[in-house]
Length: 506
Ligand code: AMP
Image (tube, rainbow, N blue to C red; front, side, top):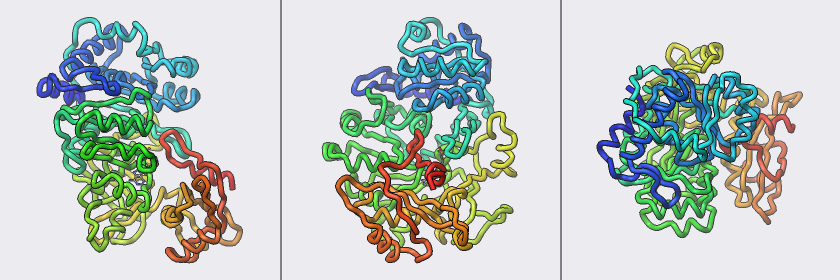
């Protein structure tokens, strides 16, 4: 099964429905998108002489062409290597070299950077800028039939965001992506033909992965003209295109909720926000629900098991009268339909309910391994189980609460302290805009707790107030021993806070 069948099917079922839009403007219908992709795939095979399994990278600011390129790649039986548009030339060079990509598509803003990176990628033969004739020429010619693929063929090399070191290429197969798509319908939503998704988050990550469930259901994929997340523009597009879904990282949800233009959102315009990829603090979540209504679904996944490990559905978000409503909101929900999820000790033994251990999971979305990295693969995939590196615990109803990445856990005086719990409490202070808690080496205790805090403009936050909040809400030993007030927190290109950098500041 070739994942490009999702487009082929929709080009028959939803022929004249819009498939791609550039801002408020229609770009291509389903039938026209399919034809363009099938012709582009001829060029990939003939003009660029690419063979089944070859890697084709792209570095593009979010735009309609990213979908054309991806489906042309799959249609031709090749493997896509989507790269985050905000990477540094050295990071692009690493991915291009590591993946052995032979061709790379770029938007004009990235052409120079990729040309520079290409010097270190000997396999890369050609760079195609999507605004040049070389690209428009790819739409001219005869369509090829869709390539035959095995379900285990590579479809997407997903480079991890590398918060701790070199990124690794998670090998996602056609089967992995199909399983993720079907799981979307089972646990997240079943979009309605003629609806829309706005791609405000990077297409190389969660938003791009959500293209599949949308593509198969006749939904129009809308790319903001700015190419990035601009709140007023996003709100306008949500009002323009019907029945809108969107994927946002938690910080992006927060920006939406705090921006004045959210009041212009028309009732019923927004069908669904899926959020995930980083912790969503309960105080932020409640505020989002109060502002936006019951439109939020959480997902917990990782590049190695794309978008699919657990989910917290709209129904659980809305169940305010439930005695454990708050603890459910603080959780990442229940195991996904096509996943087995366990919490285990270091030896892989399943732990009883309530005990904290590493989260492992098994199911069809789990990657085939890391590209050219057998050691990392052997550490992460054991007996078919993916060791996520995340730490958490199940409650008696099966809700999984994530504590932290195992490496972010603080051990102080022999007790495990999970930063997220403390961050949740500090976020309750109205003057705190953002915070992050890390461990600092301590001669006696091993580590002690330090909080980095960004305050809201004009707010004054005293350490004593934060201490009081902690004493009122969590055990005394978890209280930060030091507060560092900073202008901003270091983040990677997906908006994830770089705790390694914070630790090194200490
Ligand atoms: P990535 O592979 O870049 O998508 O990063 C995946 C990691 O993000 C996971 O292993 C978790 O540590 C974190 N993550 C993903 N979803 C959630 C969530 N819903 N809540 C908290 N952390 C999350």
